Image (spheres, rainbow, N blue to C red):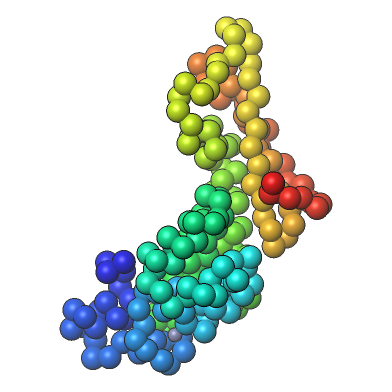
Length: 192
Ligand SMILES: [Zn+2]
């Protein structure tokens, strides 16, 4: 985390006189402060499903925060945390470069929209879904020669209470022959 150009890291390299956070006016702006501890970051997290998980650890170093979350979140949820953290950092950079920050209420939703789009595009492009990629190759059972296999996966988008369904038809060598594309659906869904 020392590689991230937070103001505190720049201060440690004697590039800045004092690493005062540009978002809240307090300091120092460590990486952890900018992503989790700053009031602007907390506002973004408050719009997500991870607010309570972060409440007790937001002042910890970033790696400790992620380690704590990894202890009780699913892998997909951790991906959402990282994506929202990226969006907070990107919004902070907009302000640092003289721009106007996006409304804090929209940052988490925008980040999760990007993530949903990415996950669905992976399916549409023929990449194995993350749940399949985590398996060993021997887990995948090819269909018989001349037969086709329908692979499916879905992603959830909690803010809009919707899911996206991806489909891919593969031959016995695993080659993708057809992808119907993204199939959004709305309703009451559970991730279980
Ligand atoms: Zn701050």
